[in-house]
Length: 83
Image (cartoon, rainbow, N blue to C red; front, side):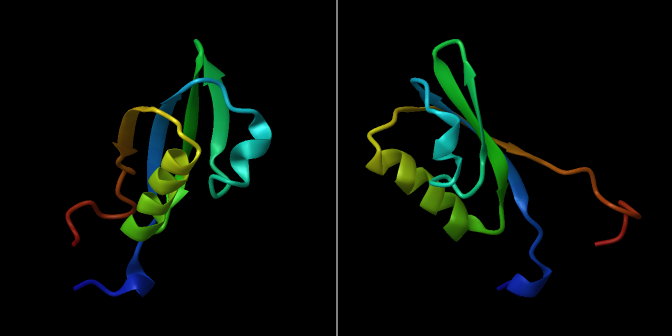
């Protein structure tokens, strides 16, 4: 089990069907909202899996169709060999 104090945020890009207004950003934990070709791209960071699933639940609660979810790895900071 990992200690949450050393957790680093993970960046996600979530594409949903339809266009959301930018003011929905607050509802989606401050994620950036960008309309693209009739869909909406939500992008931002979450601290842990619980926060991620909370975002997915909010999309479900709004009746949104999730088209894709992409987890973006951050380049390691400092020495990449150290773990």
